[in-house]
Image (cartoon, rainbow, N blue to C red; front, side, top):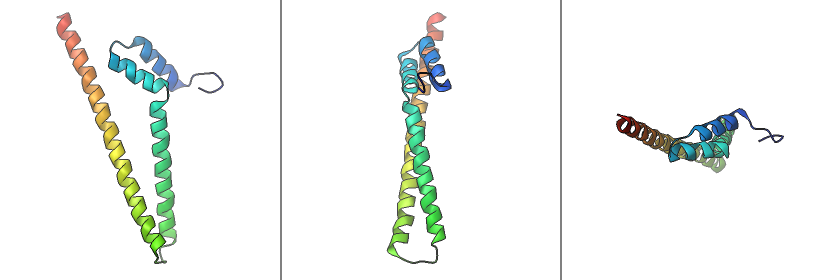
Length: 113
């Protein structure tokens, strides 16, 4: 919220919250409305930019052989692995939510028939 106004994502989240029919839809909308996902994206972006900057430093000082350079290389690799694992976790969470929504939709169709 900036200047007491909602941004586009917040407006869409509020509309989704109003129109939600299941608890999972409500939970997802509330997370979007409170900035939960925005915070995740901002942190991932910051982490990736940090890895990029350190990778560029490694390339710039390629001729030098020292412990700092080897630690830098190792640290960037570990951070990238950590980011990949985080992304995999978010994808799994998305798939679980998607499957729950589909189950709810399928259940609704069965009940209506």
